[in-house]
Figure 1: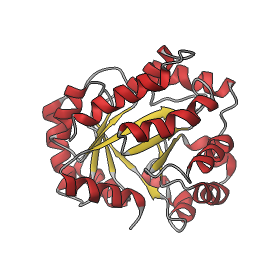
Figure 2: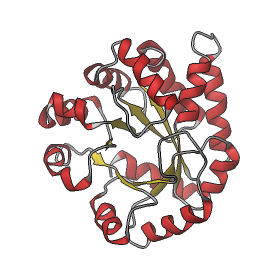
Figure 3: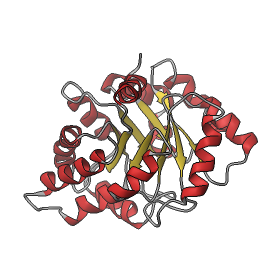
Figure 4: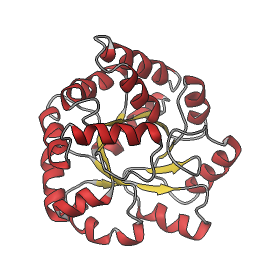
Length: 264
């Protein structure tokens, strides 16, 4: 059983929902990222999305866009992010999902990326701007390497396409609860409920919900509908607000613990 599948099975056995956190690697610097990843695990994060900075992050709002630009200036390339994951994999047990745009992966080459990611201990890949219809070439390398391919479903996804997207997923299905970019507004609960139910009617894969979730109250409400909750922009904003503060790690741990408590 792969690490993501095992994590959801264990959480289901305990009656808990998954806290999926996102951080931008290299923000505010790679040294801080190296400290943040084990801290988030200690605080109760179940799955961590490690964002690969990109110069044109079209799906992301201003918080993550600014973080990506800063991280790129700090030299946070895909190669360095994979190296960092590899350094931490021996001590970090939670699943690590690489959240990336396709350009850095294409530049490295699909075969090289899959090999490097597998060697580093990456559990899944979420390539936000790669439609599943165009993912066959990359998956020709990542699937045999044991890397789960996370697919995205949006409120605008029709039933026919939803069926295909969900069927293509491994690991889990990520439901984007709002149209637009990350971190701009909260989820529409009734629409989210209906779409999560529709996804669940098509697959036994876990369904997680993200975009716009920032408070324990929101996490608890979403957790009542789905198998997990993704929190991204709120983590990145907190990290940016506390950059250079000696209490940064403690503040992030406290925030993560409050979110996880709402999902137990």
